[in-house]
Length: 156
Image 1 (cartoon, rainbow, N blue to C red):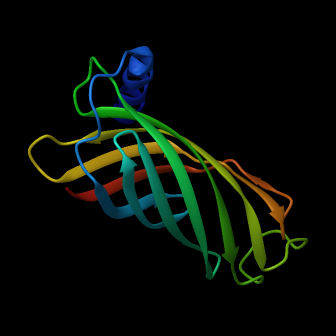
Image 2 (image 1 turned 135 degrees about the vertical axis):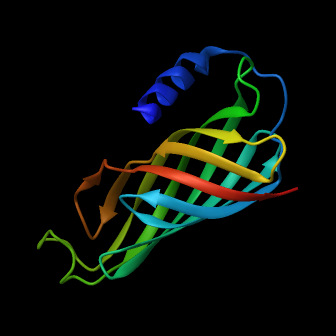
């Protein structure tokens, strides 16, 4: 219930104007959701970041690279929204995958929309995002269940 309330409040704030740049340079941590794994996010400019995600599922791994545009929400200090695009490649154990028509290797595209809160006094951030994936090679399914919680340790 608290997560739903937080998401609703944060979405209402998305139309607010921006005031300053991101408060950290690189963040490394965990991504918890349908695809669990690790994440590293690095800002290449004040409002542009690259993110690498390594997920583990079906006895294998999926590597995702994202380019993200991140903006602060004026009326909520420390809270940002971000949008991004990227691609993934993965390999997994065919016996663990639930669709028989897929091969054990996939290639596809990803999009992401999310919210991230950076704590002002400790080097951590927490975020929630939705990242559906569209496979072009090896699987014809859309993975639309890409909601995840991101917990990162931040380095300036």
